[in-house]
Amino acid sequence: MKTNKIKFGISYINTGSPLHKLNGITKFVLFMAWVTMVLITFDIRIITAMIALGFALLKLSGVPFSNYKTLMTGTVTVLLLNALFMYLIAPQQGTEYMGSETVLLALTSHYTLTQETLFYLLTVTLKYFSMFPIALVFVFTTHPTEFSASLNRLGVPYRIAYAVSLTLRYLPEVTKDFINIMHAQQARGVDISKNAPVFTRLKNVAKILGPLIFSSLDRADVISNAMTLRGFGRHNKRTWYSLKPMQSVDYMVLTTIALVLAGGFWLRHQSDQLFWYPF
Image (cartoon, rainbow, N blue to C red; front, side, top):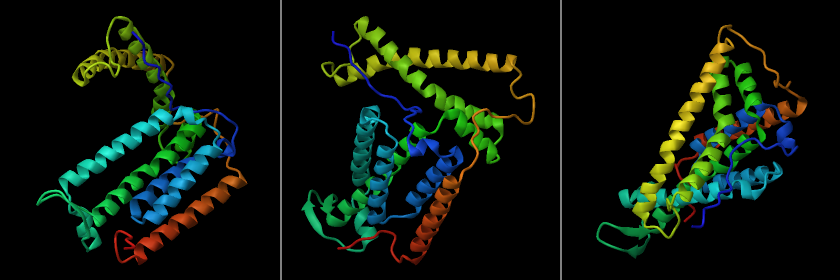
């Protein structure tokens, strides 16, 4: 039986790019400001510009496309399915938002495909997708320990900050465990390839997820015991080895982020309609 090969990873990759040299606080603020901007805007022009900027930053990070190709394919598939379900649940949602109706295809008495609905679904799908590249930029360019130190510096208790660090640090380990368990199960005759029926594949995937969950729980127990034996959490404060000082470029980036975000709030306040619709 031919085994499936998976090349997939979401973890810190040090390529020495300018984004890697930014402080963790700067990148965290950039990520949160980006998410805020996505939430407050329904202008497809701004959303498209954010997607282009996000992929430009992702290219600037120097991370090879193969490292996130699988994730991007999965994300696009999920978003397309989400758009389909949105249409099936509320086929007239776009017409209600745009205030007009241009029928392109009359399917049934209830389901009609309109230009407004297509524009609405496109805007919402791109809106969700615009957070994909900046999330990868943040994960690929920010070391987990550095990020935890930055959170602690912003006032987050170090116990919570360290928990976030452990989560980011062990995501690649969980991925490796999944691949190892999958190969072991395939060696035992468990077929999850495209040749097997869909329901058979779903049932066989459960045979992989079970051992993966138990191995993850066992790793968490080992880490918890090790941290307890070393007295973690005994003191109210702690120092961080990887905490980097803020530099002038960080303050320049933070100032730019503040100005752009303020502009986004101003545009949202001045806009009369929720969606920008040019037709």
